[in-house]
Image (tube, rainbow, N blue to C red; front, side, top):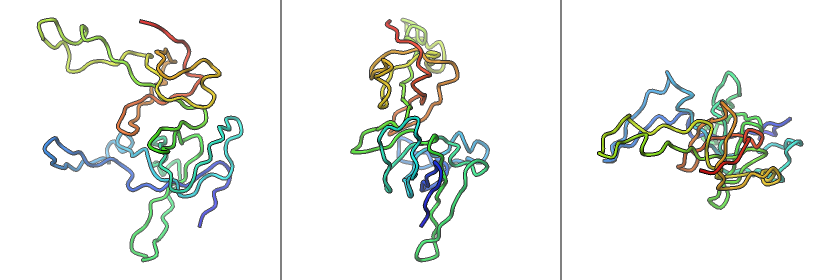
Length: 204
């Protein structure tokens, strides 16, 4: 058994990359993810050994428990940054894939099928351009797909400290440049950012 020290925890992953794709007819395709490993990195796993020393600056009162599902930065799977620990099973045949993760790399936990944000992280839903910028009134497409509005989004999941700063679920907000770290959480695409990255609320 491992007991994490400092502000680290250990997370178990089924696999490091999302290397399969299911077509509409059910056909399963295998992807070669070696060239773009981190683009396809799996960003969720199961807490094996929680941190024993939560970050003091943003103590949200949420204590992670062994067996809980969490979402994290793709660097967790990068062995150049974090440590992979292989623990032999009782049969000595299979091995668990357990990675060391720093507390700041873990963004949320799933409890009772709900997303619970950790520390000072929030999830913002991307906003796409108006249809008039994408397709003409006669039905002619102007580009392959809609473009995302730069530095704009809708707040969808907040943390314990968000409302003290005036940040609420459903707000249309403007955020700082380069804060649109995109990830998929429970089937939805979000930008992960911190409270401090949101600079203004706006109305259409």
